[in-house]
Picture (tube, rainbow, N blue to C red):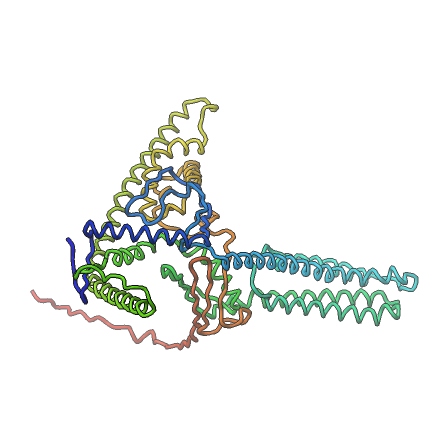
Length: 541
């Protein structure tokens, strides 16, 4: 039913318009489309290749906002789009690539510097013991029993130091941070200054004078190894033990859907706290699904698209003759017309907003009903497929070993019977881009191999899981940007706020210091809560 409302000589309605007005709308749409085509020559839309599609169905259903073909084709289309790339975007992408190359170079430079410093540290005690035998062997005093015992002490201490340094420092890097770790840099400078100081003392007091007391030289090397062990203990305290005690409670909120988690962190810098949050994000947060947010946007666009404006007083005023004054008058008339139309649209949208909650309620109810219906069909299809697998296993036990099917072949054999129901369910719940046909078949083969139930197979599709549960394309090689007003090398403080941005969403992190807890003790006398129950011997009859 058409609803009409009049404002300042104009009326707008939602629904279908008259035939003549449709003809005028089509002509104006064709004119706009030609104008867009002429403007779209400067932009290029790039579609990245998604995962392998589940089924080859090219039909786009009315309730779906995005394409459900699961990436059957990879195209490069020219045209105006919200994802179009301009020249500035291409320059920014090129700069990002150069920055990534710079980060790789810095990582390898840091690794090379650490290796050089480690070799200097471990070769220095050996050089202290070997140089006197190479430069003045005839002047050295004989090494007694105590000196030979010091050799064993140096050997074992250096072995312990080597294992400790390998366990603490030479580990696979978890991430590339924007700035240098302050404590690691301080420890490296401290070790370098320490070794250089020992070399200076060794050169002045032993090499120049060619000291003959070899036992004293060995004790000097032992003191160097002991000092290096103490520096390694200091590194364990600063890098590992200091952050164990929780000091801050951080609230992590995803900007797209408002998903929220709370974590306890210790004394960390902002960049290390960001790294700890991202490591937990991939395990705790459900996968980010932008398709779930498209329903509200399409609903708002539908409300505004249903409003049209037409003139109820007759034809539009004729175009005036050419001239400076006439052009100004025409422009003023057009501006007034557009202003009145916009005010009328706003008034109509406000009136329609009163009934929009009913539409939202029925849309959500219809969506839930559709999800339950397709979930029931999917459960029945999967149970029938697994029942067929059990029958196949019973038949294969009677066959020769050469005729037995492996789990991969069994998964491919029963997959078509459940594929259609699974695809419809994934499309309804907006998860079709998270699961490819290859990943589903691998999961099915895994469940068959480990003799899992149909419910175990369906759990990862019925309940959205964390990001790491899905294919590597959803989380591998993702670059995060840390945005903070304070320096990223500074420590966390009460009220600190920073952002972690990745693609079209970001994580907003707010920090609160954990309160100081004051506990007191209250003594309760054990005899204070004892009582005596007196019963009367005589009872009423």
